[in-house]
Image (cartoon, rainbow, N blue to C red):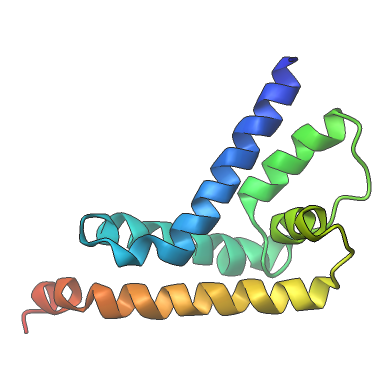
Length: 127
């Protein structure tokens, strides 16, 4: 396996891990703060960096797609989630459907991390 292929595998594992952690990391008490950081970083990438690179921009996807292009892949979608859902379901799922699912998942994760970290927020605000 070449170094580029190894990087592709590493990015795939990392990306799937971050995605799953963002969706479900709020469930475990010991991971709540780390989950909060992960969700905030994702929001910063999607919204703040998105001002410059397009709403929903993910720097991890950008780096990953750079590796895939060097490996000869073309016509990569803007979304990592779309790319792998298309592979998983062997279908071209419309980008707007995938985007709606992805945003819904992140909104739920943001709400859940806020609810689960409520005590942390209260403690730091003096209440």
